[in-house]
Length: 449
Image 1 (cartoon, rainbow, N blue to C red):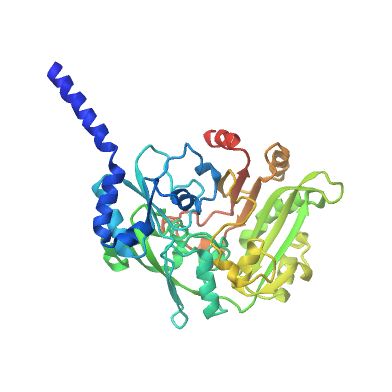
Image 2: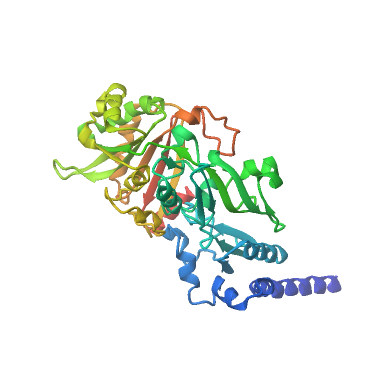
């Protein structure tokens, strides 16, 4: 019994000693494969580097994942090209380290740069892989995963006013994670998701091989288009199909408070929005405001939309389909498709297109403790349910709470739920995004409930 116990104790002691060295072992392995010591020093950050913390937090959107108790990576690798990624994957695999891949850092739960488990991991940050190569003649683009949505839109706009790509409106969101999660945006009722318009990809698998659509096979190509970022490999670049849009599109915003019949309008919108022509995208942003009439708190519903056509076409269309909204020409603005994406993120009308190139998020949620979550609505919500919901916006801590309703229908009704890993297709009337921000303690209570 004693010899056996001694062996166990010695084994545990050896394992503890060995597990204390994973960072050093990983770094040694990586240095041997980088070949250039100067590039290694510039591209790899450990907790001993003075800039480690700033690099880690550079694209962290929620302060929930920047607290002292948040697990942090043993190292952050910022590769310049595929061989750097292959080296990092090899060394992580050799030394039993998990990999987190970050392109923009916008995932709501910080999955690209932290972990919910007490396991050692390394972040591969694709911030340096941002090439965008637009081919106007073929209406395609090759874009690297570290590029943002804004960088993609900017390069498309530089080459053509009448080509677009159906991705989201958050111009600081990284394309790698966006497309890996499906990638829906204001054109998805007309052209489907961003992932539906991926026609090829280059991926590094766990063995370090670089695969394209043909060599990775149908199953893996299916999985990376909506199955979640970093789950099946690291996508280096995507080949995307561009779609036609008018030289000018029309955007509109119309806000109504409860005193201005917002409840009935929100309720009626449910019946109409998903049945509108594919060329129109509508959403509602619901939040707490002070009433302009009596300065008391109220709830406001902001109806917004982007239409692939002119104001003269849009206004009679809304008057016919949704007359209760009361839209007039003065609520509408015509601009290029690229400009409309800036408008959708509440940038001032006329702001420079170079704003699309900004990689830092500037919003009411920037660098706050927030929680966001989505639902998909398949049955109409009764008006009484909305009336029962509004008092929640008056509670303490709900100052910056909001809900965003996004109409589905159109092209999404025509695509099978098995076409890609993103299943929310036919039968979904609209989605609801809930956003809540407040003190750290309350966020913890929210996430544990």
